[in-house]
Image 1: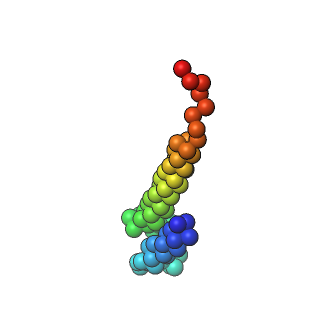
Image 2: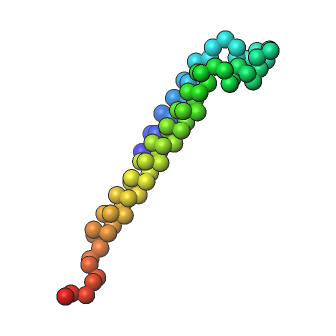
Image 3: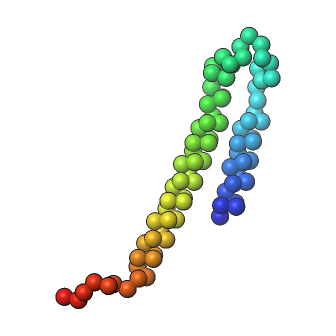
Amino acid sequence: MFARVVPVLVMLLVAASAAAHPGHGDPGARGVLHYLSEPIHLSEPIYVLGALAVAFAVISGAGMLRRRRAAESKPDRRAPR
């Protein structure tokens, strides 16, 4: 599954950065101010944080499921009452 998720995330990030608008590549008077003042520049960090959150949820959920199944398959070693 990991091999399928990574290419999709890369495609999303590349598509987001390809949506350039005027002002890119022109280190004129605006320079760094351009990146701080244009709201579209906030979308890429939001995409990255969202992708990391989804990846964390999937990985931690799979780990919890694996531990739960392992615990259910082990015999009960407690002393009988």
